[in-house]
Length: 532
Image 1 (cartoon, one colour):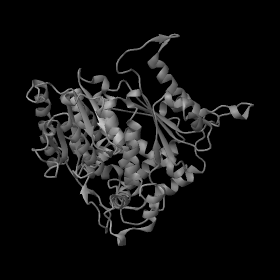
Image 2 (spheres, one colour):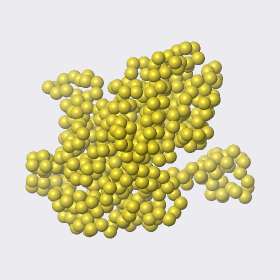
Image 3 (cartoon, one colour):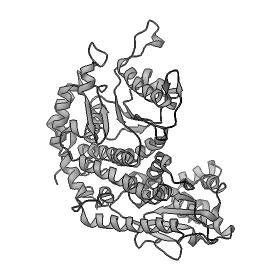
Image 4 (cartoon, one colour):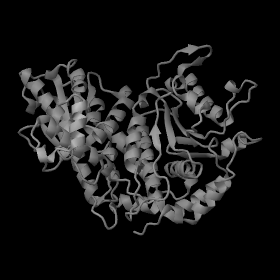
């Protein structure tokens, strides 16, 4: 597969020229009814409204040309079929396939990557047996009681995605079941969770591909000590999600082990056993299947070459337009759904760990901007926090609003003629319009410049299936951007240096470093921090 530098595409030059006179949303007819109707895409129950982006027909045509030149859809299909994309040409790298899509490509007769899909099916079958055993009493605690709580212990992709999914779908939780999470190596994180639990009816799902992740290993030992102190056998309370044949694949120490594979990166692993175990415990097996079906439907739909009919591809290209051609360094993900309160945090990792790169797939330093800073919080809370900067600050922040026409629980109250859900969505739409149109006022402090880009993604209701679609939509948006920027979105070398230095500092704090190995800067830092 041949890759080209982002700045060499013909469409790059055309888009650079178009950006010099980009669409002004505050101009006369800059935002019109016709524009709002025209700049809309629909896909799998989602409507994507992007009339409030600073694009016109010429820009969209050029973005289509960029997608075609860069072969974004072709590379995406190759990824799904098992192309080795996790690599840097000519340099040592992980050199792996990228097959998170295989974890949900389990429903058709012709999966894109048959071997990986067969493994995913096998793990789903094991998960079903495990969940059925919890349900019918084959798996109980030492006193013959049912387990009512699961605590997932993992960090990074083993925490953020699964946590976001479990929170998003709490409305569908089975009676008497709850899921908690421990991620931080800060002992207060584990202590806060453990102190409220009945350990005798709690399962701990330890998630680590290598089985050697320092934070997770440390928290596991803390949990084992707590169980033993309570007179409980840890082997009857701990579940492992790990690499097959690794140090945690040990039936003498874990109730059961389910497997994760090297070709699924942590931040893309929420639809593998990394996310499915906790989700299945809380919601049941059928809800896991619905989530996977939604994700697979999006995987298939994202093969569409027409950017106007492919929402994740269009989102990726609009993001590139805002970032590389209009010069906006950040993007805010703003879900108007409390259930999605941790979804921006998951996307922050997924995007910034994937596309926070400065080396091309050929091993050269990039000469263009790559991944933006991604952040966000749910509305309407955010309106009373940081929206002041969005509307009147000197930094222009493109915003991506996510909302649903109906609430999950259906519990609502009418005040002044409208319900709470109507107020929520009205606020979301109003914010998009306010960012675009602005307002003139004789008082400069009350003037809104406007012309600030945003988009709206809206569906009927947040369900397991739509959550699967939404998750996959953003995964693909991130991958499409990485392909276009000619970077490897699937490694994470940037997290390694801090781990190495932390290990050196820990050796010195233990007092077992040889004097010759002690770096004077590290030594001084420890001393000045009061740790020596």
